[in-house]
Image (cartoon, rainbow, N blue to C red; front, side, top):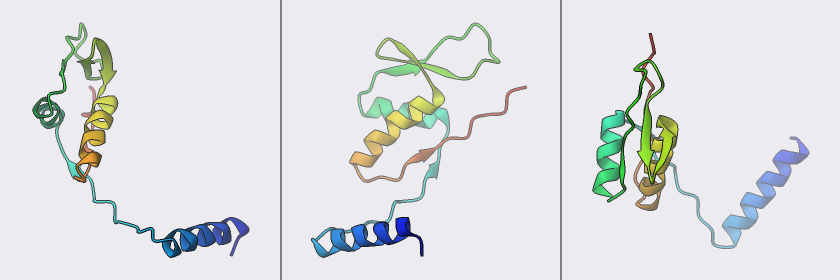
Length: 97
């Protein structure tokens, strides 16, 4: 067993002995970008698809006056889901042709 692994084991043991608990992280649920947008709108988050000049460009969204990527959109939604102890979204980007 490596020194790093022993240190990690000792830290986890001390955390549990001090009354800490470990919860299983829920598996991600598949979602479409539209489902993520709907979820955020139900949370009163102002976000909408950005109008792209080139349809082949990665999906972009407008949030608080800034252009964000699909990854940032999902990260934003998952922050709200984490606070509510809901499983995170997992969105697969569509293959671009």
